[in-house]
Structures are given as C-alpha cells and as structure tokens.
Length: 484
Ligand code: NAD
Image (cartoon, rainbow, N blue to C red):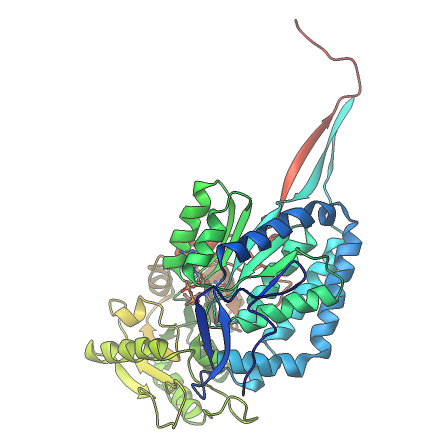
C-alpha cells in the first residue's frame, strides 16, 4: 500500500515539491515496505515557508480572536469527519494499532483545535488601576513559531503545537520527524480547507539539519520541540543564541509508585498501559514501577498474567493491541537494553525478545523485576515496551529514589490513602502526577516537564503564555509631573 502525499511539503497554502532535496523513504514499520517518498526541504523551500509565514502573520494577529477560533473549530470538525481515514494513515506511518490511532492520535489533535479554538475568543489582557492613571496589558502573539516533532505521536504533536500557536495569532512552520512525515501534511491541508489563510501553517520535511536551519533563522521568534533530551539541549542552545522563546517537551524515566494499600488490579492495569501502549514509545511512560515490598509478588503475578494475554501483530487487525516499534534501529536499542538489564541481574518476568514474527520491528512486552536503581534500565529512557519493577519499603525512601534522576516529566501514585496521595504529589519532582490513573493527557490539563524533561507547557490555559507575550501599556491622564 502506498500513501504518497501530493508533494513533500505544504507551503503557503498548497503542496510544494522540490526534487532537488535528498529523498527520504517512508516505510511501514509492520510490512517494512516503502509506503511513500518525500524530499528533504531545500533552502528554497525553507525560504518560501518562512517568508510566507512572516507575510501572513500580521494580518492574522489583527483579526478578531473569535474568527481565528472559528477556523480551528472547523478544522477539528473535518478531522473528526475523516477520523477513520486519518487513523489508517497514522497506523501506516507509525505502526501503531488501529485500535489506538482511532481513539488517541487525531482525536486528541482535534481536541486541541477545539480547546484552543474555543479559548481564542476569551483571550485578553487586564486593566490595572493606578489612581489617576491606569495601565493595561495586551496579549500579543510572538510572531513566527517553529514546531519540531517526534515520531511517536506525529499528528497529535503537530496539532498540539499548531492549535495554541494559531489561536494566539502566530504563524507556524512545522517540521515533522523524518520517520513519520505524513500526518502533519494532512493537518496543513485540513487547516487550509477550514479557511486558514496561506502561509500560517506550513510543513517542511527533513532531519536534524533542516530543524537546525529553521531554529537558527533570524525571523523565528519561538521554537517548540518534542524530542529527546540530547536534541533538546542542542535546540534550546540554538534558540538561546537568538534569545528566542522555547518550549521543550523531552524524554523521561517516570516513576509509578504502587503503595501497599493500592487496588492492585487497577495499579497493574495502569502499569501495563504506562509501559506497553504504543509499544512503549510514549515520553511520559511510567517506566520505573516502584511497588511496596509486601505486595510485590501479588502485583507481579497480576502483571505477568495480563502481559501474557496481550495480542501483538498486524496493526490493521482489529484485535491487535500492540504493534511493532518504529524502526529496526529502535528495536535493536530496546533489545540491547533488555540484554544489559539481564546481565546486570534483573529477573525476566515476561517477554524479553523479538518474538516470532514474519515481518515488523516487534519486541515482546517485557517485564523485568529485581531492578536496582544503579542499573542502566532504571536510569535511561528505553522508549520501548520494557517495564522495570523495583520494590520499596517506605514513603521517604521511594520519594528520594523517584526524585534521584534529573528527568521530571511525570509520575504516578496508586494508593487508597488520600493524605498519602497528596503528600507524594507535593514531594515528587515532575510536571504531571497522576493519582490512581496514568498517562491520561486531556487537552484541558497542562503538560510538560521539569529538570531535563523540558521547559514550558503544552495544553491547558498554561500553553497560552508560551505562545504569546504581554505588552504593558501605561496611560497617563493628567499633566506630566516633571521635576526638571
Ligand atoms: P529526536 O530528538 O531524535 O528528534 C526529534 C525531532 O528533532 C525530529 O524532528 C528531528 O529531526 C529533530 N532534530 C534532531 N536534531 C535537531 C537539531 N539539532 N536541531 C533541530 N531539530 C533537530 O527524537 P525522536 O527520536 O523523534 O523522538 C523520541 C524522543 O522524543 C524520546 O526521547 C521521547 O521521550 C521524546 N518525546 C517527548 C514528548 C513530550 O511531550 N515530552 C513526546 C513525545 C516524544
């Protein structure tokens, strides 16, 4: 099956091709066959996208916010109408099961367009009384924003960045990850169909060099990256060079704490979702599962039984729960992590290998118990279906161990004790903490990391301040009191 887009890029309201750019072969992670071919953006394509964005942005910023919101809402409706077709494209591009992409990826993107489309009309500043005089603030767009995406949630990431950027009156040039270039192109076409003026959301293809060229450009005011910590360091440094605003959504090694009084069935369900959804390729995954010593065996028993029942296979099969990883190198990295953990003394409870599949970059959902904090598995992001189970004795100990890493994307707490839950929430160093839940990221709730996991927030009202700036206006209403 092929899924070639009309052209590699979408610039100034229409598909744009420049075959002079190096070819990027796009493969289906299940069949391992080429499904599309796009070309890396040439300097001419980047120039066209940046110039179109600059030209279009002032008029967009000057429109009534309710008008901007209406276009985003229309785009969300188009996405929902075409939900099945878009889910199939996402599954082809990422290898994620259709059962997931129907409910998670584009639907969450549509949520973002609806949320920020609705919020747009209510955006504004404040009035500050100063006696005779007064001041007011204006919420102004930043201008030209660059969005750079990861491959694990390509369409959701594009929507999560485009929606607040556009709602606030900015233009955005978006570069998807080179492994998954297709979804963002569809978003650009849908936004245009919904009435977005040309130039306000362009998509250009390419790898790190293309991303770096965009970040460096003097016309760019803000960079929003979703990617690894290593990339975040480079992009943040490049943005700093031009004193540009930056949002960094990076990796993690998030703790999920299961207390002795937790509902163990619920906690096991959450631990499975927190490690195996999207074949474990989720930034906020709870990959360090800390379970209270006294319930560890009972908990592991539940995990093992439910893991054995998971259905892996063709992502387009309705019954499939877990698909392949994104690429062969990613699978090799994940398998190496498993081998190293076992060599360091971790005990294999489930999975542990590539399984027996005719095609596809599969790794069996893997549970390793007896993991110690000093093992690489407990310190490094794996980005695959690998759960590390560690045990703990008391609350102070588990908090210290959970906080010991420099990451801080998310955390989870399972307990029936209300006071303990909120005590742990306050103590955990993370951008998001779930109580008796895991990995739910509704658009209404801010999302982002602390420490090496990033800066800035996506989603929720919090995202607005990362796509706009405050201008303070002092209004004098009397004679100027000059002492000179
Ligand atoms: P990556 O860091 O390799 O690439 C991310 C994007 O950055 C790609 O589009 C890539 O082309 C681009 N890029 C790479 N180097 C660049 C440079 N020097 N300048 C500009 N752009 C550059 O990440 P990935 O492998 O695509 O995605 C997996 C990582 O993303 C994981 O670490 C995961 O935790 C993280 N992630 C984080 C979130 C979040 O919201 N916090 C969400 C999804 C994924």
